[in-house]
Length: 193
Image (cartoon, rainbow, N blue to C red; front, side, top):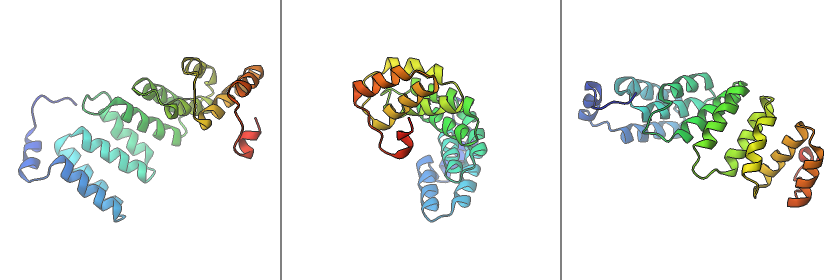
C-alpha cells in the first residue's frame, strides 16, 4: 500500500479538484443528510481510483456506522500496517468489528494491538482488552495488564477488573481490590459480583 509517487489515478483526482479532504467533507455531508449508501459509493469509487489509505479508512468507518462489520474488516485489512494512519486507530476499529461479529479471539488480539499502540495507554483501551478477553475466554491473559497499570481511576475499568478476578476464581484478590480502591457498583448488574 505504500507508494513512493502518485499514481495516474491520483493525479487525475487532483486535476478534477477532488482533494482527499474535499471527498471526506462531501462524505460527511452525505452522512449528515442520512445518505449513507451514497457516501459509501463515493468512497468506494474514490478509494478504488486512488488507492488512498485515508479514503479506505473512511470507507471502513462508514461501513461500521451501518453495522456492515465484515465489509469494514475487509477494508481495514487492506490498510493494516500503513504508515500514514496511526495503528491504534486501525486496530481499534478492527477490534470493534471483530467483537460485533462475535469473533472474540480476533477482537482480543486487535484490542491488545490497539493498547500496545496507544501512546497514552488509556484506561478505555485497558477496559476493552478485559471485555474482549472475557468474551474470548482468555481472561488469564489480561492479568498482566492489570498488574502493569495498577492506578486505575475509571470506575468502569475497575469493575471490569473485578470481573476478571471473578472469572479466574480469584475471589480474595477481588475483595482486596475492592477494599484497596473502595470500588462500589453503580448498578444491579455490577452488584452481582
